[in-house]
Length: 76
Image (cartoon, rainbow, N blue to C red; front, side, top):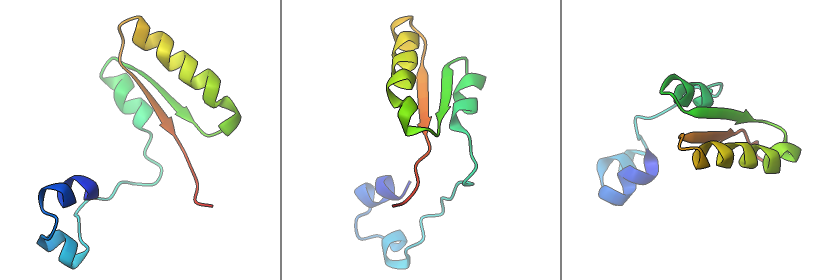
């Protein structure tokens, strides 16, 4: 949201006030949203699973289904 707002209004009030009116809960599971729309969703928390998760998503896309890989990351 912030990036899109700044691209359209690079010097706008949102930038001046550092208020972008967009916050999501930290526990939001985006994979469930895509599943509700009929797609394939997967939530990834283990970095060791990245290759396999990408493979599963690509398999779904190649079969004609939308896929979303929700990768949970932490700040270093």
